Length: 553
Image (tube, helix red, strand yellow):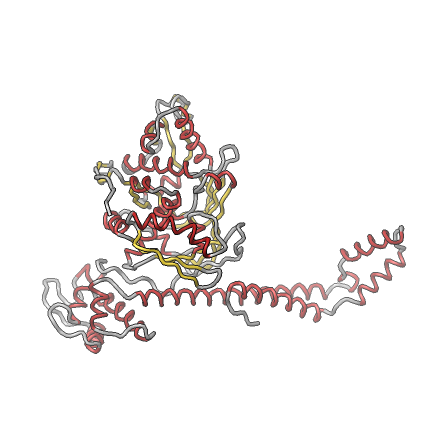
């Protein structure tokens, strides 16, 4: 396949870093969460977009929110606004770091970057686009990650704080602007200066014909950082989640989902960003997609792997589905019980001082008791003594901790009956930073099982809480005098029907007789509690059935 990437020209930034001229650094939160609509039709139909999720952080469950709200006077930002913003990101990137307000630019500059002619209509549309983005608000409740402070932000803010066009008065200085001035929002600006960014190939981004493909390139570039850092082969995601992250309309039928996304996937495969895409149908309503990074993705990772460390992406968040007919009770995925294996080229604490089996001067030292046990385990699996891949050489080259992790992973595979343990499997897993797909599939199964168990525990806790509330409510109801226990809503309804049928109000005697009859038919506190508990159990059983989990009460 012919490589269409233009020759890169590097420019020096204020910080002295070299940034290729075709690279833009997009802020990682905006790359991860939806902001722009991906079609003009969608942008015209909506005024806000919500992305809700229940997640686990520090072993606590919480509900997080990412909400984008448009200004009614300007409308919701769409695909053209996204292209304008990418041009702004290019200008910011080429300006170097630290980024400072205001950003100086011209509308003509943006037109040139977007390959648009400098006619009056295009000038107006770009300026209107900048105003639209400035007027769009983000509400974050535990979703926007502040890398500088290493915490999640709960606040309302905008990407752009102000935009002042040439000839307008900049109220911050009181002077007439001689060129366009863009003041970035404080959270957005701080995130860029904290290097919480994802490098993108601007020319490749512009070359993609479909707006959804362009957005998927941006999103997968961020996700592939974790995949390639941990030497995995693919990123696995549910169809519902990828639809919400892009965002696109969720399709109810598998064939429609494939029909919408297959052309997008094919464009990224043909241009070398993906090698392939696999779909897995777990059930009629649950479909998973596996994205395999291609040569372009791997080359980008190799060039820019030091540019962004996406701590936020270590937490898997599953959105609550919104008004498009999906589940409002969507639970988030609990944090994985086992972390990805450390890449081979990471520096461990042992390697930082002296190697696991060599002294400071390279002389052999006596292995510790734990290392000797590890040597014996490796020998038992056929790892023979030799100068390159013997047990002590593996520990020396990779560190005892890493060897122990890889050996445990291989033993796990054998225990599951997925692989035959051999010296070659152990050595390959270390030297190639590789494990069979079966290991990652089993890890995914473990995470799925852990998620299911977590949901079951949550449902059980909800049941206990509601039982306690019902007991307290019935106890308070039972302490009332009998005539106070009746529902006066029913009494009001009886009086209304009485007036309609008799054409008069009931007498005091008739009203008292009705109250006495209602009191006589009241359940006992025990009967009412039993009915309350039956209703709770029925409701939670239905909820469990919808989530595919067990509920025993």
